[in-house]
Length: 202
Figure (cartoon, helix red, strand yellow):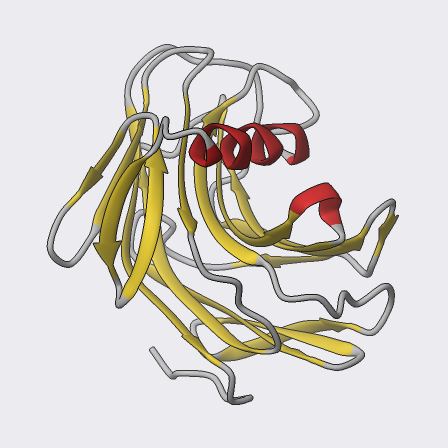
């Protein structure tokens, strides 16, 4: 994902991205992305598909809340929302693998060091779920549907970063799963950032 995010920022810097406004922020879109008034839909249908929506502004400490689902969620894809600064000087990840529907993985990085990883199970993976992280100096706390599921106090980044939504194809048994043919979609219906340290209940 790191190399792909670097590619995205490079392509956007030379004008290959579409400018969009949604969720109260300005973004650059690349790939199979359909932007509606109140949602964004990403598509994966081929082994090399990779689509992004990245904020043009930098966001720092605060509360990040996103609501999305993947249908059909099957092996061969990864859906993600994450804070990213070039070179992973800041990286905070929320990721759902197609091979593990109903499980979300939270990680943080200060290149090249990883913080504490948390995996959390949630029911009804075909429905929308709310994923939140609260990032304060020295700590990140993670929530699923308003319930705290873990925290990291190791290698917590301190630099503001772009926020990125990404949906991409994989063919790897250890990450995302082996590719299975067919279209699948990641639908995001909400994103909210506040520099205040609170979380929104679903």
